[in-house]
Every structure is written in structure tokens, then in C-alpha cells.
Length: 330
Image (cartoon, rainbow, N blue to C red; front, side):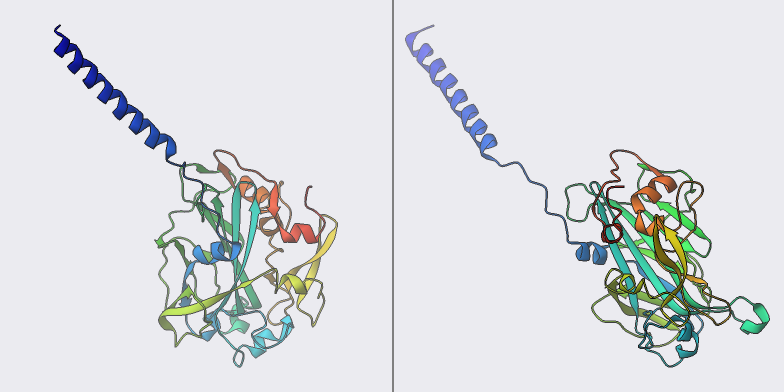
């Protein structure tokens, strides 16, 4: 090779090395994307707050607050329903483990009733509180990944897996949940108010509730856009948990791991104390769970109801209910 050829070869090789070094420098200077900070518990509750399609025959089907009549007496709610404030509220709670968030929503109706007169059917009772639970995995994004929804309808909890990593265990898969953006859509039956995750025909009317900043009263039995406000269970229902007995907020005391809690909202009309508190459900407990675990120890309850692939810690980093009872770490 001539001296000129050698020079050209050396020059070309130098250019290749310089370009490689330049690209290497750019790659090493690009910072690795850090996980986004998690959303606050309030933001999580709002992000996943359900769209509620409520069957409505009368204003007895409107959701509201337990103290809609201005007091925390459970046994006057049937008679106060026609004159109380029926603005829409949904109670919520967020419990956090090392790996997951558990979001609980409870919906209250002053009356559980029937199309025919209650005296004829025997199917009515004062107060009604049925609930929804969601579980989301922490994945480095603010709101995590929603894995499953559970709904309560009367005497049963229904499981709706949202990801292939979730498989039925004690509970069977109940169907497929529909969404409106990040909000699961649930269907609440007229009169009895059982909550389901699959589409149902709601008659004779329907109110659609969505989370908002204002607690609104539906305009009638057909209203496609009524706003409800979220209120924390910890700052409302839970603070009244010691008010147990006739004429008070709650009744039907039971033992939860050595602590007395009320299983029901106090009620007298058409049956005694037939509406559960959020921590009073005994549905789908089997031989493994205790009454109250679905709300108070959701990591234990969910891993009994379903199988979750991957890491699923039952160690809580935030569970104010078990903390108040001195049960964290059990």
C-alpha cells in the first residue's frame, strides 16, 4: 500500500473510533428513568372511583351518607328517608402493603325495599351498606396496575380478575368488568342494591353516578350524570365504631381478634340490624377468614379469594384500622 493509502486508512479508522466514542459518551450521560412517585391515597381513591349505574324506581334507591338525616342514630333512618338530604356520597378507604394497594368503596342506602309493600314480602330492612374492593399492584407508576375488582351483592362476594396474573382460588371468576377511562363500571340492582361488575338491565329507571367535587341529588329516576363525593371511612364511620347499642349508630357487637366491633348499623324497621358495617361482613370467609377480614385485613382476604402471580406481600405499610386495634405485625 502506498504512503497515501496508509494515511487514508488511518484517517478513516480514526473517524470510526471518534464516532463510536461520541455515541458511547451520549449513552453513558443519559440518566436512567427513575420510577414515578406514587399517587397519594386520596388521588388513588379518586383515580379508581367507580362509575355507578344505579337501578332506580324511587328516591329510595339514591345513595347517600349514613348521617343523611343529621344524626348518627341508625334506627331512625327508615322514617327519615323521605325528608333527609339524599346528596350522593361514597365512603372509601385505602390500605397499603409493601407491594399492593387495596381500595374499598362502601355505598349506603337508608332503605332496602321491595316493589310490593314490605308487609306482604318480608323482604325489606332499614339501612343497606354494600361494597366494592379493588387491588392494584405497585409497579413504579403513580397509580400502579389494577389487578382485580370484587363486589358485594347480598350474601356473596364476586371476583372479577383484570389481568392474566390473577386466577380464581376460593372464588370463581364472575365475568368481565367494563371501564370508563380508569374507573370500573358497576351495576347496582333496584330495590335490593346488590352490586355487580357485569352489565345488568336496570329498570324502571337508572342514575349514573360519577366521582366529583360536589355531592348532588339526582334529578329523578333517570339521570345520566350525577356527581358523588368521596368521604373517608376512617374519618367518619370508623370514628363512631364504639357507639354500639339500640338507638345508637351501630349494633351487633362481635369479637375481632380480641377487640369488640359492631357488625351492623343499628336498625329496627322490618328486621333488626340487617345492614353490615364495612368491617362487619362475614361473606366468603370459609374456614380461613374471620368476619371483618375483607375490610380490615384485605391482603389476607384477597389471597384467599384469588391467586396472584409474583410478589404479594401481606405486610402493611399503611393500615390505620389494624394500627388502631394494636394488630399491626400479627
